[in-house]
Image (cartoon, rainbow, N blue to C red):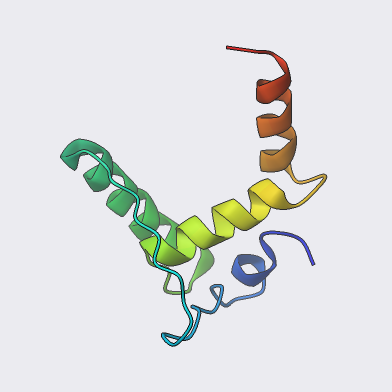
Length: 83
């Protein structure tokens, strides 16, 4: 299954059950947070399903770890090019 399977097939990635879930915090400055909120709202409209920040982060991280995905290839190329 590729990293963006859930979003393409009409359901967001299921959230881990509360019991045993590992918390993960990402901090954004206020303007970046607003931009991300607006992007997620636009994404909801485009794909027709509800998606929140945690779901978007899980999907993006899944895509980044999936070989041959566009995001994985981009990050791999960037890592190989140095700073």
